[in-house]
Image 1: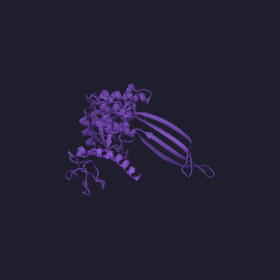
Image 2: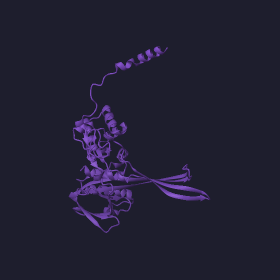
Image 3: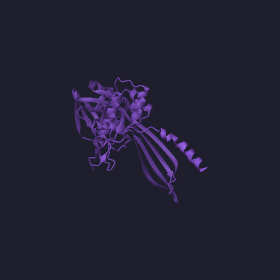
Image 4: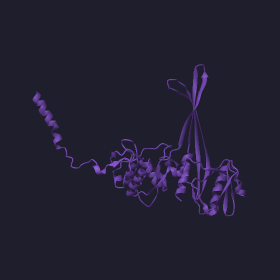
Length: 341
């Protein structure tokens, strides 16, 4: 009985003899290893950060072919490098689109819409410039044209100066700052870009039955939404631009063309700005592209506690306010247009 079991085991292990032998060395050679710039320990050339200390690993162009990209979704506060799609005459069939989507870790349908939009749009946001450059190189090999724009260049932490009014002179614009006694001027030849869009805000106020165990139940919830049209204008020398909101702007510059509502007046103002500088680039497709932008540039969502409120003796309710706002997303898209000039 014992010998029979041994024979059966030997027969079941027979398949091991037919396994193919490894004929190539899959390890990196000693001369292919890269020293960390910080701790000097050797790392394989397929990573951008040191395995030991997390420091930067500097790769040559030849070594970059081994690089395994980790295109994780960055947090909004992290500084990254945006790989921007530039439409060209290249035709992308289903197989090529699926290959690009898999490489970028993007949904196939989203990528198809980005390509079909035929507008410069962000495809991915990389953690380092080297990672972004590697993405750009590999996309170029497939026929995708891109350029890299850093978060530093977008300068989203710097506020766009708001305008209270504009004076149209023969050869220049006088820009009047909001809540300030200062002005600046843009000559007709220096006026380069007009970007029209809108900001949307959603506010969700919720009241929960507070429980020390953390098992809170929502008692009521109120949601409100608002939107406002706006225009950003840029000179050739200022990448931050100037912003005009429909509310709080003096539309007397329109003269006899001034309408009754701010919504109509801001459209009139956009047209007058275009007539003043016909050579300036005009962009008004933000609203149609904002869902595609959210693939890389998400809208901001913040939740703030409104504290505990006594409901009755020994019972408390907890209030929360959640706001969803696209101002930062629009600002990125608007400033992207300046870098495309």
